[in-house]
Image (tube, rainbow over all chains, first blue to last red; front, side, top):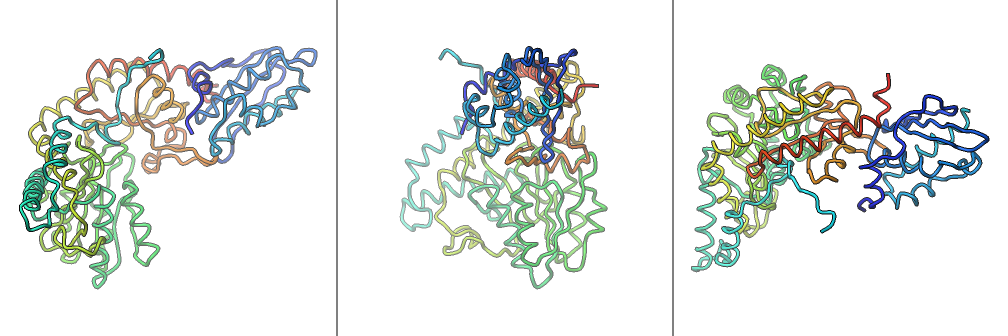
Length: 118
Length: 391
């Protein structure tokens, strides 16, 4: 399958790229098999995600999953964010070929890791 | 088209656009030379004459004789015929093959398959410059060696192997035959099979501005091959099957044009390549050029961009209409960095960030300028995203 228009848009125009120097929840996860890496930094205030930034290294789905994830979690409570699944992220992207689903798994894992690391 | 973007094709090592003159010759052959080239009647003889003319042109491209050219469906089939055909015909002498660690999959795959079936395979290293050492070839030779198969120029990094020197080494060995995959080199380097000293040489038409589906194997007179396609007398019993007359005619026309326009194309491609490399070296920090700087094809640049991954860059360029390629592939969560770039001894990050830009006769200076602008932006954007740039 070819990538969706949304996928291409996020690849060409990543949202919320970078790091937050005053983040209070940070995680940096690497897929041990393919080496793809995602880094999330969040500012959580009164249990709500006020700001989020990401950095990513890897194949295009990993870059795009990071970008879309930041849009999905922005403004959400931590409880809402924790309920996000790989399928939610894949839906938001407009789908990914099954061989690229590991990118969404890495994004969700990094999010959960950040929320644990507060 | 509201979203029309400019399109720049810089993947000429993957395949080339069909030259309109080649397409016209092919179209004429489709209509006018429909006869079966094996038929005795006039229609058949007309097709046979067209095939013979093309065979002369293809032979002339590499300094071979007409009857030493076997047409195939492409480079992969020619490599299969060369390696399997030779090994199967030479079992009485031994079952040892010498090859390099940077061969195209159509050579590496056949060697691996023969290995499973009892042949021994020595894969020579290429060192940091991407070039096989002749002394390693000499050291690998054994009494039971029947075939050396080493490519003429590499498809990913363009490095040119010391084929003439290996040919000279092999000339003294009676039972050792020498095959070279010249798919990337034919038409881009001046080749002469006698100077190269090879017994078998592979070519593919679609790298020479002809369509896919046609290639050729040069087989030196006296070399015994076990045919892989059997059931017909075509191609001197080496490749059974009704000749693909339009494809062969296209290959002949492409070979003729490649000879006639050799210098012009060489100068043109090299100038674009050099202009491109000069611009990116000036404008993009943290890049590594892969492969020997001198002994390489003039139309190709292989560059690793630190901190970013090749596929991400490739798709970013594609979104702006620039077509390039990467040897790395990430699928099913498994990373497969380019085996060629890994063979140079570079680390995984650089191997993952390698991109091949290959230029052709139809590219323009303006396209290079556009590509550089797009590339600078894409690299900046991806690096801004990359956690590897964090200190």
